Image 1 (cartoon, rainbow, N blue to C red):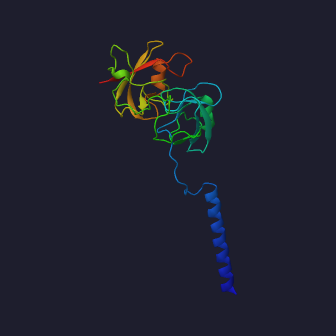
Image 2 (image 1 turned 90 degrees about the vertical axis):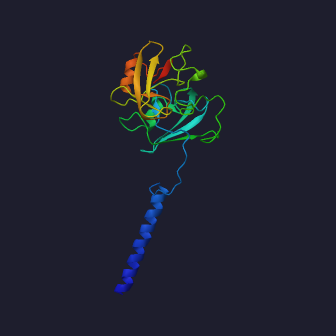
Image 3 (image 1 turned 90 degrees about the horizontal axis):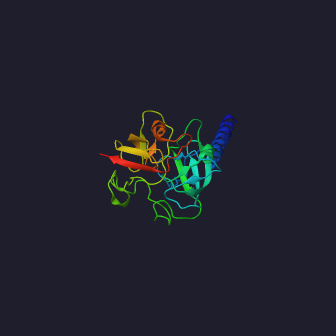
Length: 232
């Protein structure tokens, strides 16, 4: 009888363990799902613009619906692209508030999914899209002009924003390698800052807090009219 009771007890424990694994997998605790590709590479940040949750983009045309998920906390925001920017996806303040972790202004581990049945990541560029960060060769400028030349061409297109990271003036980039020196000028007030690229991001140039403070206009978190020059 003791042997039989032990067998029954062992069978019960095994059944409970199997049920726990099944439940854990159903709720996403087990890492069995195939990783989904993201439509954007690099960190996701925000422009601090107001309004309902929305985003701007240099890849997707106006009206595109995207779902942005913070993989560190599982929170997601569905946004509509409302205009161009210098990032693959740049959230506004309301969208960032839906997915951010307390005290953080950058989402490094993220998943960006297109919801309207458009081209998958790596496909052909969508009509109306602009140059993606990293698609141009470092040092190339719009129209082939040299940085700082008479044409006043910029090596980056779209608005410039910041990551709110601390430290001395610096930037991250999806186009230029670490160590690259850039001069960023706010054409609305003539202020300029020279920064060194310290790491990757989803933008052609993404300033940190100190660099943004050096050129911003009071109350503004975007530099729409700008020139980015590659310093040799």
